[in-house]
Length: 283
Image (tube, rainbow, N blue to C red):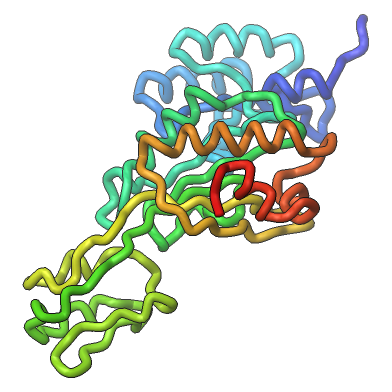
């Protein structure tokens, strides 16, 4: 019997358990969504090849544990019947995570749509180390944008027209950051306190607070684990159709400049954000 290449199997989405006789099969799904048909088949696979249950990963994937080595190919074939496949590990772009900002009342952008575009173009791309992308629709930050190699946060920058203020106080009451004051009959926003959630623009009845710009702000070089790093915020606002191009440029920079096994955050710490900004044509 040939020797089992556990590392190769892991890169394919078959993760050896602490009981070496069994594997967990990780099925990658797109943007954290799965159809009822896919759910039914995964349930059947778990019954037939595992122990009748599945697990959910932190990155919105699905795992089927307790699969024997000799059944891995059968599981792969079964998953393919409904458009699924094992994967999501190794030195690649990992499954991309997005909150439900597309339908959430707090959402400031199409997180699900952006996630699908990034998934179709970049998922599984070979890079120097694991590369995680997270997309959140607002400052509530459910998917922790700053703790991904590349994160995007939906942001709404407000602007004021003081002469239109009717002193109703709705904006003041709505602001959880206490960044808004009414002074001499005019509304004023402390931009340093402002979380850019856009709530004030939604409640203002007179047009005294409107949207200046809205879109996704990127965070570069975050990671979590034994050694964590908070991603650097870039003060640029990207439209939904600009996120894919921006991601491609960051990945190109990473591939061209990172040492073997070096995460993007470690690269940023080593070379500095100014070099990245220069490469992107930003000041």
